[in-house]
Amino acid sequence: MALHPDWIVPDWPAPPAVRAVCTTRAGGVSNPPFDSLNLGDHVGDDPAAVAANRQTLRNALGARPVFLQQVHGVEVITLDAATPDGAVADACLSATPGVACTMMVADCLPVLVTNTEGSAVAAAHAGWRGLAGKSEGGGQGVLEAVLMSFWHHSSVKWSDTAIENKVKKTLVWLGPCIGPAAFEVGAEVREAFCAFDPKADDCFAPQAGGKYLANLPALARRRLAALGVTTVYGNDGSQPWCTVSDPARFHSHRRDSVAKGGSGRLAASVWLAA
Image (cartoon, rainbow, N blue to C red; front, side):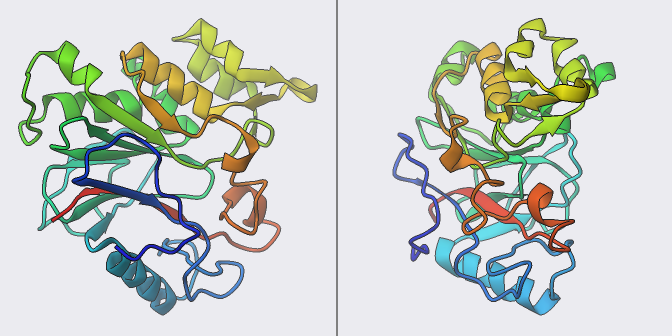
């Protein structure tokens, strides 16, 4: 791989066959306000620039990043070499070498998944809606969906099939997202989480006017812990991980879409080396 030195390579104990990276703004050709590495083709950027940026990512990975149409839902799909870009889903998994599970974000939380055996990878796009899930779905969100698919899918090979061992062998990395000092939300967001997990209230700091500051990575860690996954790395909610507070490095929809007329998208990818 020839990754840009500013991109983030996860610090997690993944096996050698598992590769992962999260891009920053660096290394692309897009003009402001999408400068420079924008990977989103739905944000108003020049399509030729987006295509060039996506090719830059593909060349750097030595694998094919599959770009989904993300809709803040809980749908999970399995990727292989024939999967086209544009499938509607907010999570994916793959056991096919050279096919990169890829999530585009600009404040939402990218979540990358593998196992200690390096037999498969998965990724999820966890904004608050996808993370909370729908009330009619019992509050089961995108993390529950992707991990259940990862643990039970026939394409994922495990040396021990007991579910308890699958959970113990799962590794998760959380990428950059809007931080807890910047993510102001309404009471309905808090209620979406607390209705099914009253202790999720610890992840919300009351503000004036009935608003709250929400800690998205802490909410994700609660969801993962409830599933038994404790080997979680990356974003701990500290300021260096906040997309809003670092305009030189990160795209941010909340910070730039109104103030600058648009925002690009980062991408977090995980794949098996071919």
